Amino acid sequence: MAKEKILVTGAGGQLGSELQIACKGYPQFEFVFVDKDEMPLDQPEKVRSFVEELSPAWCISCGAYTAVDRAETDKELAFVINGDAVGAMAAACRKVGARMVHISTDYVFPGNSATPLKEDDVTGPINVYGESKLKGEQLALQNNPDTVVIRTAWVYSEFGNNFVKTMIRLMKEKPSINVIDDQVGSPTYAADLAQVILQVVTAPRFVPGMYHYSNEGKISWYEFALAIRELIGSSCPVSPITTDKYPTPAKRPHYSLLDKSKIKKTYGIEVPDWKKSLAICIGKLG
Image (cartoon, rainbow, N blue to C red; front, side, top):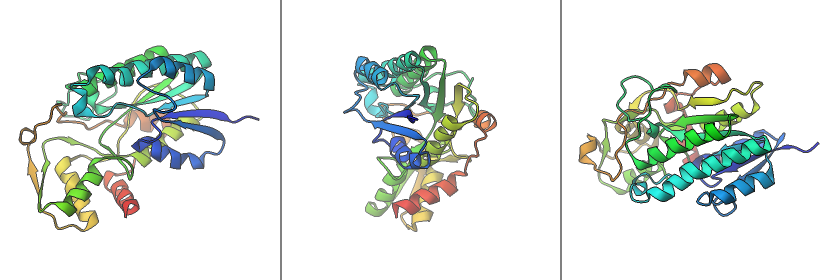
């Protein structure tokens, strides 16, 4: 019997790379990993035809325009990739009878909450990247009711560019560093998120809709940097600063903590503590 196909976009990104490792534990499926060469997300019609020709049972949508600051001046492309292409993929999935898992972000919220963000909290992005990702969420759920959207935050891994790898590099290169202390959330180890996605795919009961996932705990970027420093045994001085001391083209949300109770309850997901996952990742980075 032919294996069910699972299409994964963004193969070379942090999450796509972790899924390439995690999928080895799921030999019952045939995974098809694509990047922009095979399936250009800036050309939604090609996205549609690729999905229709492949006719997978599942689409895991990890590919995205993620250059948050550049999106401020590159709005059109950000909306095509994060919005239109996702909508085209969802429509094609519906046509071929495929279920979809789409990855979104805490940036769809304004970041002014004081309590962990629930799935039905009011959105209100404060930058173009967040606006484009919100459009993608909406189109995914509209165009294919058989879709799970997972919002996540502060993603890092041993692959690609991320906060953890940047901090490790800066602690080796700089005499001291400053890190923002008035933005709080919880990091997400991409390897953990990859396992969650595959748990959703293999769950006995598929429950579409919106979900939140990150690791457990609540910290600031400054506290995250201190934990990284401790784990790599660095003595580089790290000082806390406020957001206004580090201006960026795109505004960042001050509050990114996600309420994970829905995904825990619906899919029986156990969420690791952020520091345990960070230790695992840093161990792999050597």
